[in-house]
Structure formats: structure tokens, C-alpha cells
Length: 237
Image (cartoon, rainbow, N blue to C red; front, side, top):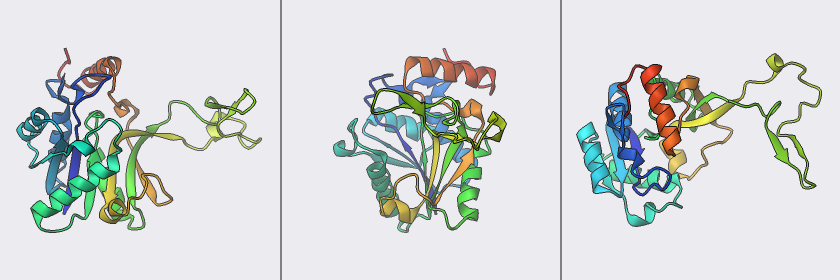
């Protein structure tokens, strides 16, 4: 069995109630639930939240497992892995069997194409050596050319020195950035508390236009503009 988790904690400080703020005609988290349903690959679509309002939105959107998240898993300092393990345990108790894969679909990264969720699943399924697959987009800045780090003596230097290896930008290795949209896991690495990036992490490349993590009013406005003018979604007011 496969499941996805849409983790939507209440209490955002940068953009209050962002997970249920109306975006392109529906509450923000509802887009991710709808995309999970449209992918056709999940047996369980779970919304986990500490808010009854958010869970009601998830139910209305079509989620078939609503998880009332305990207070200790709903602070602004809690990391994602304990939330996923809790959701996994709840889903397996509900289903009466173990999940094969768990997808963490971030509701604040709603811009996905129809190919993205199935593509990440196919990558994980076709490569049994992988623990997980993360979604990425092309990096906006290169550690070989534009990203610098401060040194101990107050200078800056390239994050990845070229050491004379790369004379032209075209010769540089491809660089990607995590876009937060999809984290696809096998069950065992979640139980074992493995980090999201290991030597057994694969990737699914998404269009650059999908690279949004909504955390501020400006993020929300720009993502809404792109959703409407590039993807043809309803306008966000």
C-alpha cells in the first residue's frame, strides 16, 4: 500500500492560516489533496493537523484519513520526521497492514504538474537501491559561480571552488535545489529515522515554474500570479 501525508500545522507566523488561505479558487492545502487523488497511486491520503478547521478542509477536499496531531508534534520547533512516523503508525493501524511507500506532499508547494507525483513514485519503484526520492528544480544560483561563504577571517570564497576544472558555465555540473514539493519514502528509512539526504537518495526534476514554498505574503502573491498566468489556474484575489 502507498500513502501520502499532507502535513498542515496551524499557527504560521509569516502568513497566518496559510494552509487554508484561498489560493486559485480553493484552500491552499486542498490543491495538494486533489493532486494526490488525481495521481491515482495512493491507498491512503492523510491530512495531519492540530486544527479541527484544517482537518475539515482536508475532509472536504477528499482526504480519507484525518489525523488529529498531538500537541507535542505541533510546535513550531518540531521537525517533520516525527510527524511522518506518527502519521505512518496511524495509517497502518487504520489499514491493518504496513505501508510500502509514504509520500510527504508539502501543501505550501502547490504547483505540481500531473507528471510529478507519479514520476517520483516511478523513480523510487524502478530503483530498489534508493531509500527515498526528493523533488528538485534547477538551482537559481550556482555554488561554482555565484554562491559564496564567509571564511573565518572575514573574507568570502566560492561555496564549491572550481580549482581550474571548469572554464565555462556550460561545463559546470548540473546543480539543483530542493523545492519541498515531494518527498517519497520507502517505509524502512522512515522507521529508522534516516535523514532526507543520503547516498541512497534519488531525485525527480520538476519545472522551475513549480519551485515555490509559500511562507510569506509575497510568496503567496507571486505563486498565485504564476499559477494563474503560467498554469491557467483560477486567479488568486
